[in-house]
Image (cartoon, rainbow, N blue to C red):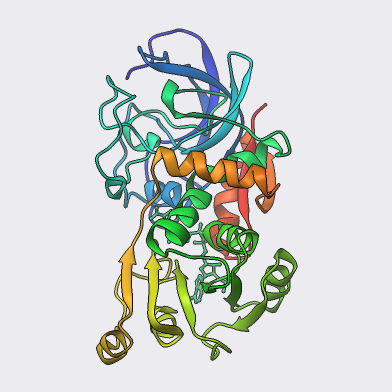
Amino acid sequence: MSPTTTHQMSAAAVTTPSASDPAGALVIGRHDTPEPPAGWARIDVRAAAINMHDVWMLRGVAPLPGPWPCILGSDAAGVVDGREVIVYPVAPASPSDPARPRTTVAQGTLLSDVGPGLLAETAAVPATHLIDKPAHLSWSAAASLPTSWLTAYRMLFTKGRLRAGDTLLVQGAGGGVATAAVMVAKAIGANVIVTSRSAQKREQALALGADVVLETGQRVPALADVVIETVGPATFSHSLAATAPGGRVVTCGASTGFTAEVDLARLFAREISVSGSTMGTLEEFAALVALVERHQLTPVVDSTVPLDRAPDQVRRMLSGDAFGKLCVSMP
Ligand SMILES: NC(=O)c1ccc[n+]([C@@H]2O[C@H](COP(=O)([O-])OP(=O)(O)OC[C@H]3O[C@@H](n4cnc5c(N)ncnc54)[C@H](OP(=O)(O)O)[C@@H]3O)[C@@H](O)[C@H]2O)c1
């Protein structure tokens, strides 16, 4: 998909990735407005959210698709032909056939991996990827749903098979996936334990509805049926130790590194299942948004800044101080 019009818009883009200064690599500038091809729609973005995926791209770890400078961003809410919508963030299998879904979401390619992303005033998105925005959500709260909340939804239900009355352990309190997991699990009647290194974040997790909060690595009061693992080696051993016989550890992230130790005796003696999870299907996204509307859940937004301050949100994400999603509003 190549921009062909002479209309211009503001967007956050990267030309030269930087492993040492990813926030500095995110540059706000004027770009051609993408022209939607057949089957795609133009969205006037009202708010977008930042993800670790954007940071991987800014660092040069994840490949950048061009055209250059490459506009980042996968999560957005906005207006298409007067309709208030949220964008399903997984790229279609083929840009020329956007209604054909991927055969597996484990491929996990986001819209910004295949073309200009959504950290922009305007973007082109597959017309099939639009879900009506629940009326109770602000633009920033709506833009928080696509990546983190969808990932949490699939981890909890499709992979973790969480049910009312189950015990859920969430490692790390402040991340977008973690805050989503706590709120969704409480909404369906699970018992939720959250760990965090920070006393302040433990308090915030309690305020979100967690039943028990613990310091990272602390012994759990009840073994978990399902564990939400986004942290990686810093918590993985504890996740296995805290899982009940027959329980499920579901991992989607590796914020502290990609190699973790596994106590095999614990794994087989307790018949624990460990599974990976990435993003979710369009059907799961629609089910998530319906659940959010039914339970009137409001995603936790750490902060929203104007587009020209988007690099500040990357810095805040890397600081580890954020609690909830980091959002950007459009001019
Ligand atoms: N596969 C997918 O589809 C997918 C989708 C979304 C995200 N992810 C991945 O999931 C991970 C989480 O992303 P996120 O945006 O939700 O949150 P995040 O901002 O990356 O933070 C996750 C949590 O990690 C914890 N943490 C960080 N360093 C730690 C350490 N040294 N020891 C213990 N805990 C530590 C923090 O907990 P406390 O500060 O509370 O201790 C924080 O709440 C990332 O790796 C991201 O790439 C994957």
